[in-house]
Image (cartoon, rainbow, N blue to C red; front, side, top):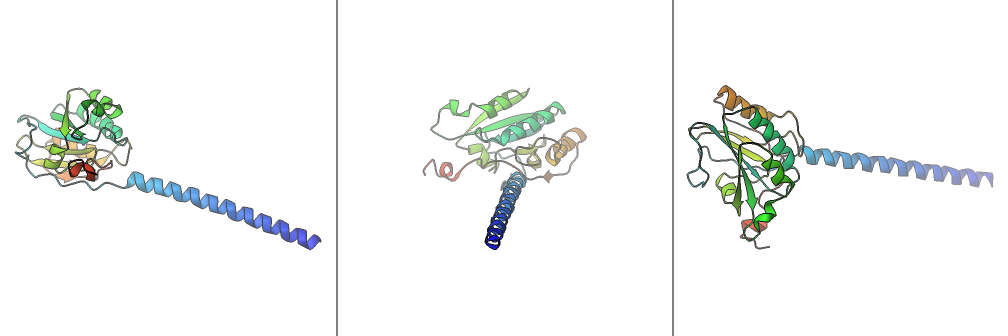
Length: 210
C-alpha cells in the first residue's frame, strides 16, 4: 500500500514538474516571437535615384525634401511620426510632407484617427492624401513609416525608417543619417530598414478587388 502511494505521489510530482516546464517554454517562445516581430523589418522598396517627374508632389529648390508614407490604420506608425517630429524640430532645412494612403472609394474621414492626429501635431509639416497609393507607387514605397529624402537638386539622399524596431521610439540610425545629411551637408546616400505595416495590400493593388 505504501509503495503504491509513493508511486502515485511520484507520478503526480513528475506530471506537475513537466507541466511547469512546458508552461515556461511556452512563455519563453511567445516572448521570442514578440522580439522577432518587433525587430523584423518589412520589405521596403527602392525609391527612384532622382525625384520622379511623374509625382504630383512639388519639391522645393532651397531645402531638402522629405516624404513619409503612412497608413492611417497602422499602430506602428505613431512611433515613426514621433521620431519625425524630433527630426523636424532639429532642422529648419527640411520641406516635409506626410503622405497618407487612402483607398479609392472610402470617405475622407477614414483617414482620421490617432495616426492623423499625431501627424497634425507636428509643426510646419504638410499632410496630403494619397488616393489609392498613387504616390507610394511612384516612389516605390510599400511600408508605412518609410521615409525618402531628396536633396534640393533632386538626388535621393536617404530611404528607410526612423525607428529601431516596430513601434519603438528612441535613438535610431535613420534619424541620425537624415540629420547628418540635412544639417552637415553630408553627400553620402544611405538607407535603413523600415519597421511597419504594409502600406498597400494586395486587394487595393488590384483596384479594390478581393
